[in-house]
Image (cartoon, rainbow, N blue to C red):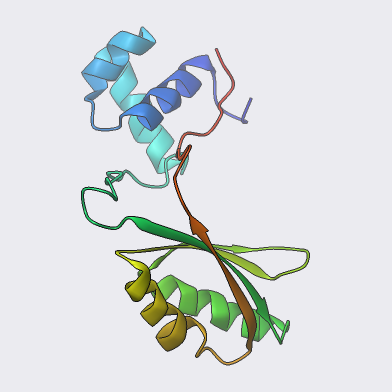
Length: 157
C-alpha cells in the first residue's frame, strides 16, 4: 500500500478513477464514509499529488479522430541536452498524445492521433521527420483499440 494511504483513501481513489465528475456525497455513499470526511480526503489526496488532474476522456470516433499510430523513433544523438530538446518538442505537438523514452532497439515510442492518413502524412513529413537528429521513425497503424484505460490497478480493499 502507498505510504500514507489507508483503505478508505484507496477506495476513494478507485472511485475517482472511474468517474471523477461525481460529487463527494455520491462517492461517500459508495465508500461508506460521511460526505465531509470524503470531501476532506479528496482535497487532501489532490493537494498531496495523488490526483494529477481531472479530465474528460473524449470519444475519438465521435470527433472524427479515428486514426491512431504508434511510432518508434531512433535518434542519432543521446546526449542529455538533445534528449531534453526532443522531449520538449514532442510536448508541443498536439498530435502526440504520449511520448515514452525507452531502453532497447529504439529511443522513443509515440502515440499519435490524427483525423486521417493524410493528416498523419503531414505530421510525419512536416513535423517529425524534420527534427534534426531523428535517424529513423517507424510507424505502426492501430486497426482497432481493444483496451484503453486510465485506471491504475490499485490494491483491492
